Length: 468
Ligand code: UD1
Ligand code: CA
Image 1 (cartoon, rainbow, N blue to C red):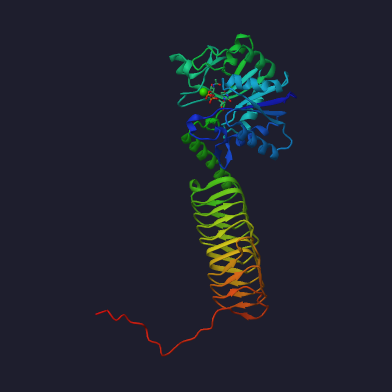
Image 2 (cartoon, rainbow, N blue to C red):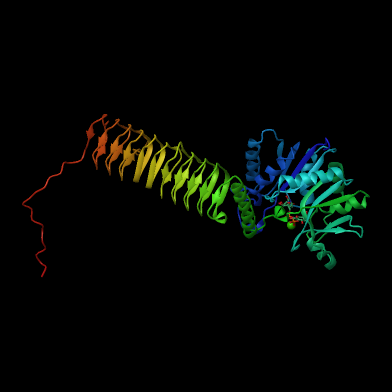
C-alpha cells in the first residue's frame, strides 16, 4: 500500500442527549469497555501515524479514557483536540486539521461505532488506495434509512453528494444507501473543502458531509465503498441502541469462545465484559458473567450464575453454581462452591475444596486444604491437607489493622472456632470446636479454649406458676 501518512480523526465531542446520562456518549460501555475504546482498538490495526480525538462534552473524562488507551499502546501518537462549541461534524474535523500534515490521508470516524472491524477499515483503505478518488465514504444499505445522510449518485452511479435527512427532498429520502460516518480523504482536499463549508442548512451546522458535493463540484472523484455487514456501523444514541450493540458484541464474543472450543449451556445467557481465554473441554453453564481478564485452562467447569473477574483457573477446576470470584487463581484441579465468594488475593491449590458460604480473601490454600462450609478466611495461609471446620472465622481485623493467620499442614480446626490474628496454628494441630484462639497453638497438640462441659443432675426447670 502507499507509503502515505495515515492520520485518524475520531469525533467524540457530542453529548448524546438521548442517552440521558452524565457521561459522554462515547464513554458508555460495551462488553466492559467504552465505545471509544473499541473504535480506537480497530483503528490501531491500520497502524496510523497519529490519532486525533475531538473532545467537547465531558472532555476531561474522554481525555482520561484516551490516555488509558494510550498506555496500552505506547507506540501510538494519540492526542485530544478541543471543540469548544458543537457546530457540526465539519467544524469538529476542522479542529484537528492543524495537527495533520497536508500530504496525509485522513480517516474520519465517529467515536460511538464500537462494532466496526479493523478489516472493514482496511478494506476501505485498500479501496481508497486503488481508486482515483480523493475521498471515499463507507456506505451501507439501511433497511430503515431514517436519520442517516443519503448517498446521492448520478445516472452513471457516480457519487455526487450526501444529503442529510432533515435537508432531503422526498425523492432523496427514498434512497436507502446511507453514510456510515466513516470516510477517507486526502488532507489537502479536506482542508480545501472544510474552508468552504457553510452552515446554511436546517440544523445550521457545518456538515462534514458537504465535502462530498464540494469535491465533486471541483471535478475530483468521490467513491463509496459499501460495507456488507451494516451491524458493524451501528452507533448508539440511546439506551436501546446501546443494548442492541451490546447484544451484537456478546454474540461475537461467544462465537469466538466456542471457536476456541468452549461448550456453553446457553450462549445467549453468557456475558463477557472483558477478555476470556479457554483451553480444551471447558464447560460453562448458563447465566455466567466474566469480567476483566479471565483464563480457564483445560477441563474447567463453571456452574450456573457464577461471576468471575480477573481469574486464572487451572486445569480441572470446578466452580459449582452461584460463586463470585475476583482476582483469584487456582493451581490444580479443585472444587469451589456452590455459593462461595473468593475475593482478591485468593490462591487455591490442587485438590482443595472451598464449599458453600465460605468467603476467602487474600489467603492461600495449599494442596488438599479444605473449608467446606460457612467460614471467613482472610489474610491467611492454610497448610496442605488442613481441614477448616464449619463456622471457622479468622478474626483478621482489630478495628485498626489487618493481621495474618497461619495454619499448619494437616491442622484440624474444630467447628465454630475463632482464630484471633495474628496467630499461628501448628502443623497437625487440632483445635477443639468452639475455641477462641488468641495464642499460638503448637504443632501436634490439641488446643481448646472452651469451658469444659458440666451437668447438674438435681436440676429443676423453672415453671410458670400462673398457668392454669
Ligand atoms: C452523521 C452524518 C450522517 C451519517 C450519520 C451516521 C454529518 C453531517 N452527518 O449524522 O451523514 O449518516 O452521522 O451516524 O456528518 N460530533 C462532534 N462535534 C459536533 C457534531 C458532532 O464531535 O459538532 C460528533 C458526534 O459526537 C458523533 C459524530 O460526530 O460522534 C456524528 O455526529 P452526529 O450529530 O451524531 O451526526 P448525525 O446527525 O448522526
Ligand atoms: Ca446530529
